[in-house]
Length: 359
Image (cartoon, rainbow, N blue to C red; front, side, top):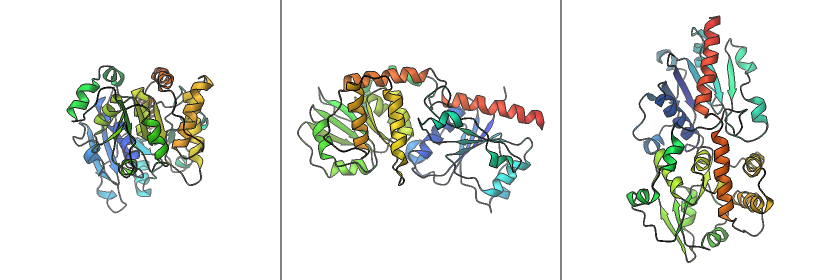
């Protein structure tokens, strides 16, 4: 079967999330023999996220209308990531290509019910300009596009040696210490969380960002240590999550990587002014905690909402043993659904064949 040429378009809003997802997708496609061009308005985060690049992936600047006449011909598939809205002149070029490319709007990840209803639907707007465009929704059920998961990822996870990795990073891990990774937006007041984590000796491994800065300004209770990390490549960030007994993650890309890590986690959702992020968080919790006995589920739900400043009240840190068991069980359930890249390739090849048949 002929390899396809993919065009992935990304505008950076949260450069660790939007660009992180697009880069993982681009690199995964390329590893399967596809050719990918990633168009992005700010590629600066790739300097630490993927400094070695990826064979088969070319990164180019966001196209402006003035430069489009000299831009290279477009490929077989155009992926518009997260509704980034392509330049009008580019859309016109797509309409003149024969056959026209498969045009996909890769949506944000959500566990909300509308995802299953909307996944794979055509866009009526694109039809008006002679193009087909389809909505592709990542998700947590077989009726969605699934989650990014590279081939062999869980085998590598199972074979991972955290002691060796920590030593290679120069991280001094004391006997008996619990390990936790932290990567977040501006956190809620940290004092009660620090007290909860210090109930047993804990080493916090903090990625750069607002949460790390807040920790730097905090008074740490006895039994709690912090190591500030540099920016990590995507592979090394996975290794960080695999090393830890629980993970605090933010946004979309880090959430999916925490799920594959299989350890207890708190997710900090990207805050939105209209408050719709609360509904999105609750939908994820309903998926994660569905069927879990209330004594296990309710402390996790409350802690997750408190971490996102969506609930008040005293903080009671959940029991990590049953919480971790549920995370690993959920990972096994999610692995039964084909990964996002495999589904997207099948989706686009099917539509490309239909387009070619009508050309």
